[in-house]
Structures are given as structure tokens and as C-alpha cells.
Image 1 (tube, rainbow, N blue to C red):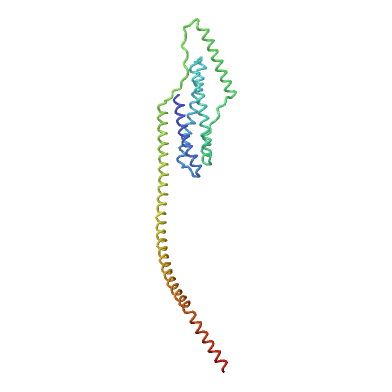
Image 2: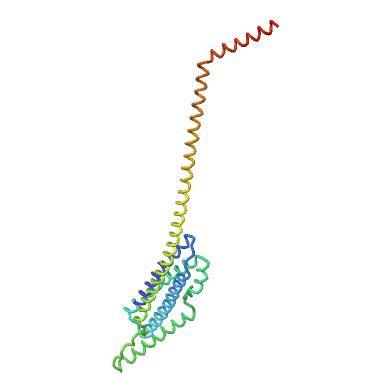
Length: 269
């Protein structure tokens, strides 16, 4: 069934977009409004398509019941309904994934499907269809002996223009890809601006490092001059110390003589 394949493709596209949106949310960033709008638009189209296919399946099954049934077609309808239920569950999971943040929850409210459940009225309607079918079989059995065989009524097959649906799906996929490319271009532009800012900061840091290098060179030169002065002062001190060691005994004798002379003068007077 081409419609089911189209729905599956749309769900795959929406799933990839939702995974990218979840990754952006996990990084603490805000997803773009355009991407979220595109996801909502895709899921809305899938919701309408699921409802339409389900209605057509019900009409076709009703036609099979009224027309006496076609085992091969009935089995195909059962298989299509199972696939449709699986796609519906997949759609519901994607809607739940969209509602992980506050903005997504608001947008997901209009995407929740109404659960299809069998009501007593529906059961009565099914019983009426079965009664009508049994009466129709009895009428055919009664008239079979007196009239030529009648053609079996064909199942009701609603007309669907799959070409337009497929073309719309391809156009929608192209629009989604274009929006994703635009989003990537915006992110690349932001990344380029960030890299340019980092480049400017690195240039400023390089200039400051050059200034600090010049200051360090000046400090190193001043330290060299101070070290040279200290060496000259140390050499002078060493010279004085050497002289004191060499002439220390002579100076001591002279001092003792002076002390003795002073004592002699004091005692004589």
C-alpha cells in the first residue's frame, strides 16, 4: 500500500529531526523555531494521513462485508491494518518525544490522536451489516435457480491519487532538507564568528606576551647591572680584608706602644 510507505518515510524523517532536536536540548541549547515548526508540520500531515487511510480501510472492509467477502483481499486488509496500527504507535512515540520540553508540549497538544475504539453502536452496525450480508446470500441462493448468475459486487475502492501524495511527500522532504541546510548554515556562521573572536583574543594575548617579554628583558638587564655593582663592592671589601689580615700585627704593636706611652706619662705626672 503506497500510502503506508509514504507515512513510514515521513515518520522516518520526523524521527531524525526529533533526534537532532533532542541532542540540541541535551546540550543545554534551544532548538530553532523553524525546525520545530517543520517537525510539527510533518507530524500533522502524518496524523491526517493515518486518519484518512484508517477511514478508507473501514470503508473497504464494509464493502467486502456487503459484497460477500473476498478472502484474499480481506487478508490483505488485515495485514494493512496491522501495519497501520504499528505506524500509529510509532507516531504516538514521536509525539511523546516532541513533548519533552515546554515548547514541544504546547505544540504536541494538537498532534495527539483520538483513540479509535469499538462502541456498542459500532458493534450494532457490524451486526446489521452481517445480517444484511446473510440476507443477501439467501436472496442470491433463492434466485440462482431461476435467473442467470449475477456478477459479484466489487468491493468499494475509494479513489486515491497517489502521484500527488508522493509528489507532496517529495516536496516536503526537499523543504525539510532545505530547512536543515539553512539551520546548518546559521550554525556554521555562528561558529565562524566564534572562531574569529578567538583569533582576535589570541592576537591580543600575543601582543601582551610581547610586552611582558620586553619588560622581562629590561628587568634582566637591570639585574645584570646590579650584579656587576655588587661584584665590584665585594672586590673592594675583599681588598680591605686582605690588607687588614696582612698588616694586623703591625697595627697591634703600634697600638700597644701608644697605650704604654700614655700609661708612662700618666704615672710620672
